[in-house]
Image (cartoon, rainbow, N blue to C red; front, top):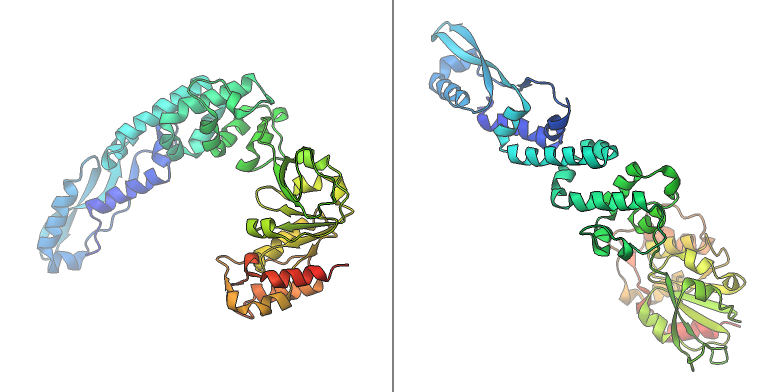
Length: 392
């Protein structure tokens, strides 16, 4: 039986809720009332062959609360005059909310709307676009509005988020809600106070003028003859903020960049060289160090599609960088250590050399093995030393 049931009617109203239309209707004319629901009814053959089932269906539909049924009289050739549902209507938002038991939630949204209209009317458009999300944030909405008001009073404040002195707000709250706060602040703040070039939650601080955690660069001196820092002797493991690293101007010839911490720590001594741990910061931080640009740079990443994608990105800042142990010979020599890359990249990479592109194509087109990956830490240490001995 495919006739519309009471559950089907509720499901139609539920879809309006899921899309946010019913919440929008609390504060606007997002839905035109009365609303006609879809109704599939029995036909003439059903009245002849399944009369009892039809009568049960009519009774159940008539008992559906908070809807209005429009009836029609049908003079059936066998069953005689019958009164059947012709249409089902929901007359108001109040009735629609009662159908699915969401009246209380709608009242909470209306309270949010009134609160926002009084405090931050520019944000009403966001509430209208994202009513379900707003309802999910109801217990935090007052604090979100407090952050917006604080930044209106202190545009581009030049302080850490920890220093925002708004009621009930701490740095963790702002960090956790950067996504929604970014959308709200874009609506509430003058465009001149927003850095439009900083996008995404990772650049929230820069976009709205907060101080951000300093980017730190970790490196090891591979040559004991290189000038060290005060208190650092031998081949130390050093971490500096990006600005201090840029000011070093170390007299090095080679710089190795590796993404694996064990490789970073175990990298062998080498005259006139340092090794940089490539995790935890973007290439922009390295690019600030002008003294790096004349150096011979070597990038050692995983032999997988993302390893070559990272190399391609790095060349956007250092065109001279060479790949290290990311060649076909290294890949084939370590067949016993091959693994699987979870989500390979497939896009074209325009900064690879001819040899690198050939290996990348073998990986992205699964020519050797599906989703092939050789992680950098699985390359033999003897293989590493042999390659280093080949450097002049």
